[in-house]
Length: 259
Image (tube, rainbow, N blue to C red; front, side):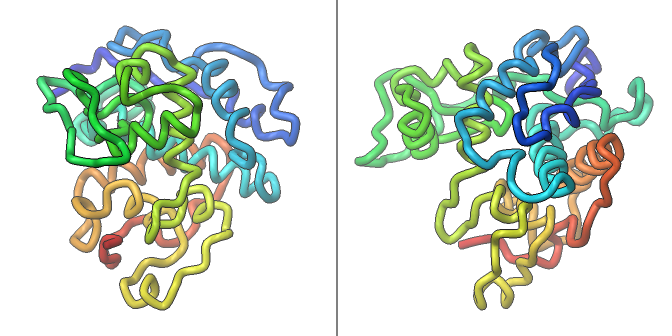
């Protein structure tokens, strides 16, 4: 079990980043506490990365912009706690005040390398989970690197050593559709219209389908597991901070995973 020596997400400043210009927000750390990622995930790095992805946090009205940031932070907070927040009921400020604890997968992960002609693994490199979205596998590191202009196949460790690159990989995943999956961005901003196949599979607009995009093969189509409850708990906390309603369809229990 992970220790409580991880960071507490503070984010009194996130709402300031939601103006059309985004530039008026004050700088500072997103987190603060003794933890493996202390000082890594900074607010400045987050904003610098977001500037490379047109539309993130700037699409739609103010409520939509806030909801996208709350959704992104809810999902990435879960990914970087390792899913243990539900065990931290006695944590200061509650279990969902804790996120962004880790820069990379813990333990001794494998190489996450699969045969792929377009995105071949570099000798001796491992493509395990790193960064806010815990990007994994060579077939994700490759296109993410191409999109942000950095050779992540050759140097995947950059996702855990350069905070701007780290956030960029998470935002690339968030903003990029991977057929048949829509992008998380299009879902939360109301731009996604479910196909007939989506409707038949129970995939309806809402935070739950974002979980399905990220990890539906493990977490969706079953009674809501603790991981999904964790994702929802973080999301609700950010919604509360930003004075937002939660919306409908927060879980994916009745959704079949994307093929």
